[in-house]
Length: 130
Image 1: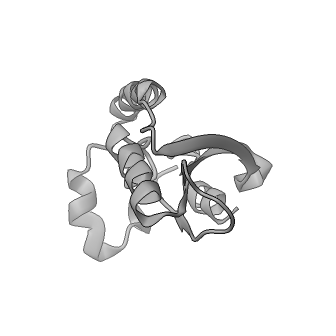
Image 2: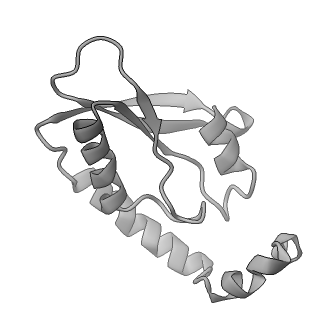
């Protein structure tokens, strides 16, 4: 399916400059997934992974970062990384999520939503809503 005609006219020029090549995305996501698994969580933050049903009842994982010394109720932050809904989160995004949890004393929800082009819009948005 061709989605070019669905891009807002003001964004078409920028969209043409995006490296949207299925093989580049696939290779980039393989690297990103490995890097994310290898990243160590700072000692002042604890992490847990939950599984949620999102787009078309497909399951996806969300990592939750909490200050290690947390007790009781606390605010929450939903961190949706920048990746044009095509690329996995970078280790930098995960690091920022951990920093936010530690410094802001809040829980940070870091969803690993379904990515385009395999799961086109609205898959990622529906996952995030879930």
